[in-house]
Length: 120
Image 1 (cartoon, rainbow, N blue to C red):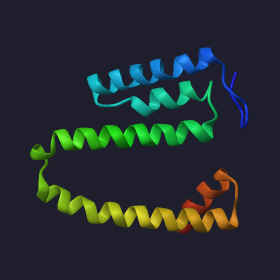
Image 2 (cartoon, one colour):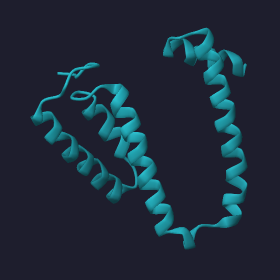
Image 3 (cartoon, rainbow, N blue to C red):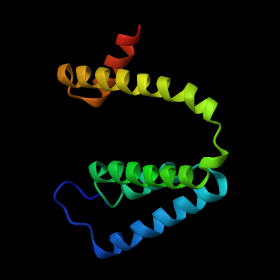
Image 4 (cartoon, one colour):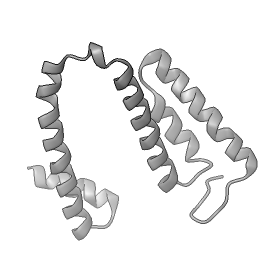
């Protein structure tokens, strides 16, 4: 059963959360992919989506920072110098479009169509 806003999940559900996260990051450690595609769909059944998405984002950020710190000497800095400006440009454009769409259309489905209409 999905926990809605203001509903406290059971103790059994809260025991499931660390197991799901461990399994997801075990798969990620083995394959290099799969933490969020495993974590989010499973945890949404026991926790609200508004809590699961930021949790997954923070877990992925922590994982990326730890991996980046651990392998920083192996990074190709010339490639990073090419990637960073375009990444920042894409983030600011997406943020601006998202804000504009949210102001005019509150539904997430409308925001997706708003973004696709603005890009044409």
